[in-house]
Image (cartoon, rainbow, N blue to C red; front, side):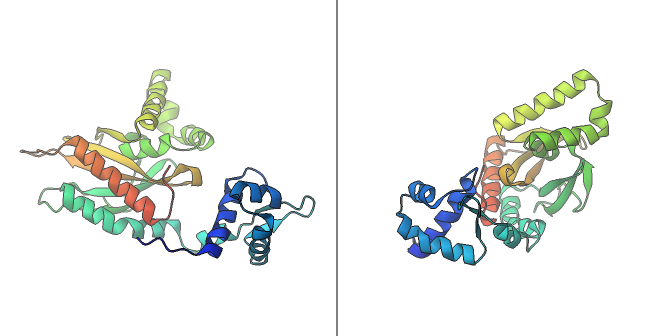
Length: 253
């Protein structure tokens, strides 16, 4: 990819990114210091961004903050539609390479919802219905997404999940320990709780920090003569997830 230089655009994006990274509104002087640019260099660009509605000048302090204009633009199209489009070709290539089916899922209430599937090119394969809902706690993908939920959302999930509420103290602790393990290792894997002879691997797509995440999973069907390496499969799965995240324009976590 060529490194095209567009100084004015770069300056505007630098301002937006600096305001996004700041926990509070910033003055012109603070922006100048953060970006290592003179105030006169930034003044006209800030005025232009304010006129276009991307930033707002607070009347009481004179400091600048982001408006919701970028949020509005980002939500003009459904995030789910964008996610499916971004995943289509990478998932097709993944399935063809590893000779396994793969699917993409998100959390919906206390369920795991399958958004997209790419079937294995082999005659014998495991298929998961698009639109199918599964108990999130009983799937590798669901536990992965649950592990990366913000604490408040995870607590809400567990309060609403019948299985967790009915579990004894040891069962609840086992789940929480498993979620912590998933966060540390950065992926989820387990013998399928729905099928014998299947090992599920799931990795994260998106970034929890912005609230857009999905699980990319391969249910590895153990057939006679299976020679695949679990480490190689996981590495390819992570590479595919990174490709989808990049296609969405999201910075990886």
